[in-house]
Image (cartoon, rainbow, N blue to C red; front, side, top):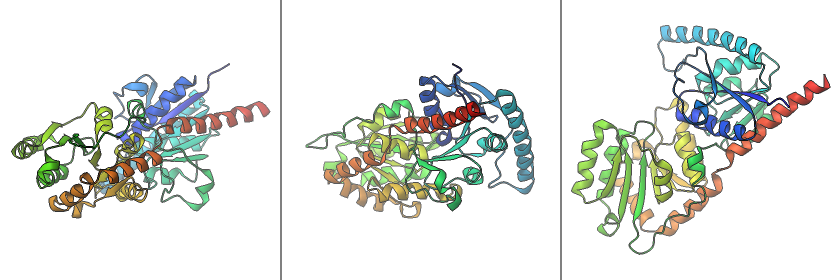
Length: 373
């Protein structure tokens, strides 16, 4: 029997790429034949995506650009859609799945002009601009949050809550027990700031931890991602206050560090949020205030509402305010443990399986339709 052929349209940040990689792994295990359609940035993917036949098309973002740059991007999107339409005509896939971001737009637009079944996955608690453009045209919409804002009323019947697929090493930690907090046990704090760290976290977190009582400060084990230009100052701040800290510009063992952490302090990007929830770790989330449509605030609010963490807007994220919050949390382990349970309840380590089921249904509908013809 011919293997079902599915094209994935993804590119850009980890928030778009990680769920595509997780779905690719799951579908390959189920015997699917896969391809990846991406833009010029998708040159060096590893893992499951790196093993796929990859097709590059033109794509261009529009938000936040000058008028000449927007005109250029519109032209690229048009050319990319034509390239994708020709590609789909040649490959004849059984389904096309997009993961948002401008890199996916040409392929998904082209797919909606054909009879190919289509689905999009939204990683954030607010429907992104690309997926907003496509929501009325695709057959299925998969969401990561139960309450996803920005969905058109006419598209609600297409929505399925699958959760946010996470990388396999993260999913492998979903059963890791919450670390011990009794007695003199170490208190692990993981600080992540996105793909390149965040200067505000480097400025605020060490200063806040320095204000904690000695009985808490002496138990801290901090892992923090920092920008290279912030590294010396952060290292000095921790050393001066006798706080045990591991610092790096890139943390290559995030799953292990997350499993050992009692609390995460982070931006509220889709990847960071979904991974903390999947592992079952509470978080203090500081949304990046300049993210498109302020979508990180929606992510953080969803976590806060679920009791799985706490939102701290950047304008209130000061050493004094954070120190008060940390003192209350680290001094009352039961609060952290309850938030960890809530995180695990909300997190969906099996999201890749649910999304793969949705794709299988799409392919099954097409094959059934073809048989009837």
